[in-house]
Image (cartoon, rainbow, N blue to C red):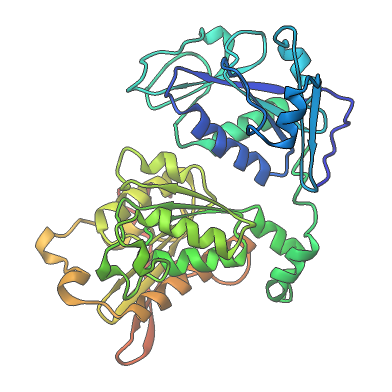
Amino acid sequence: MTSYRLKTTPPPVVSLVGCSNSGKTTFLEKLIRELKFRGYLVGTVKHHRGVFAFDIEGKDTWRHAQAGADTVALATPTGFGLVKKLEQELSLAEILEYMSGVDIVLLEGFKKGPQPKIELVRSEISGSPVCSPEELTAVVSDLPLELGIPRFALTDTAGVADLIEERFLKGFGDVNRQALSHQQKKRYHRNIMLPGVGEQGQLKLLKSSALVVGAGGLGSPVAYYLAAAGIGRLGLADADAVDFSNLQRQILHATADVGRLKVESAREKLSAINPDIQVEVYPYRICQDNAAELVRQYDIVVDATDNLESRYYLNRACISAGKPFIYGGVLSMVGQVLTVLPGRGPCFRCIFRELPAAKAVKSTAEVGILGSVAGIIGCIQATEAVKFLLGQGDLLVGRLLTMDALSMTFQEVEVKRDPACPECGHLG
């Protein structure tokens, strides 16, 4: 990886602060992954008040230090570590002298000092920030804090990365995505060969993001093929755990995964399929309170849910954010797909105006489902998503595609926008 930062220029520094157990390390892990995905070289510093043990007792470097060496270095083919004995604790400025060669340094802790700070405030830990608003660049919280500074949800790592880029990294660009590596050219060769795609199209996919809501029968093939295609950042939302009855169709999960959260099982498989991509997981059910915040973080949303209520929330959030929404539904031996582009065609609510009575809608547990039918519909949804992200081909906008596996027939039903639609009617 090549960085455009001059190595003699001190890198910007941002502290992630907050009370103990507020989730700083977990959030920092996600932030590091997000910035690395965008191509930046990231350094971190953790403030630790305890005694630092460099090595395991009996190891060669431990013996060097025990013999009195003032500086001990460990060099390997893949890394280099250096430990110096100190008369007194180093200042932050002195620590940063050892952080050359990175684009940004993220500090965990370090509440004191003039460096920019972003504070995590979690409702069950603390009701207010430790730092004053004047000391903070932003706050990350599940509370509706009004501090006169940017506020981000606890899940909005991408939003915090956007802020850091804008405030501290502007001008350095996406340093890691200017060209495909040799290995990436081999991995995506069949994509690159497609008319209108090429290397620039593949780079576009690697810079793109998609939220897949549901990690089951539809979500498995959708996420599988989006990961394989090289969609750079995938979000997976699902509150359920893997059950034996899922294994007949939910191809991201295996017998050993029974009892695990579906999103964790799926993340493991998708990361193994394609280590180029970043997989974020949200182990909760989509509802009115969280749909808008999740949707805002992604370029496109793919519906792989199994209930109409969640689809209503997603449809509303996508209309509000101007994000494309790919609906998919499957039951027994039939399935259907529709792509919603806000303002350019009908939305989900234009077609399904009101929620039907609970007993009026059958479930797969009642009537069954052929696993391969879910696979076909999921693959069509993934294809629509890739086409949109590439800006290629005709999408299923205003065209409800239906499939009957028994007769192996496909039909298109023309659907139009409803001017009185409560969700998209205001778009004109």
